[in-house]
Image (cartoon, rainbow, N blue to C red; front, top):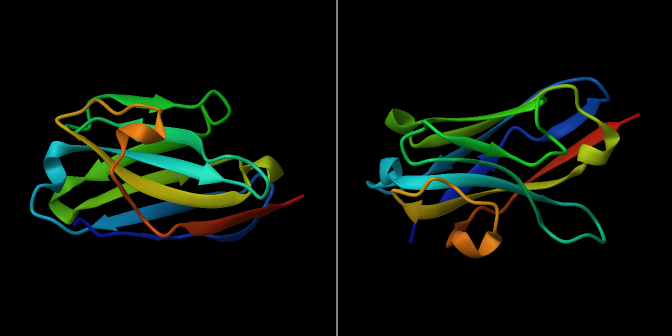
Length: 125
């Protein structure tokens, strides 16, 4: 199975920025949609952003639109989440996930079959 490893999380002051990376194993990375999700204590896992297999289409949760940017580098088997203007409510464990082959990327966790272990993002006020 594909292996996904997130990195780049940490503690940051409100208004600051972080860039998360998700390194994936597998020879067919470039054919899969990819997504980012997050889960805060006591809350369900929620959709953050997704990117199509080609990188040409992206989707964002309303709560992060305009602040976060998802991108991918298929040559490096890596998907990124650039997070700017961070808020305390962004505090969560962030997970990357692999979606459908040749997929556009969707918001439902059911559309994703492989998940990373997560990386903690903490935003102080």
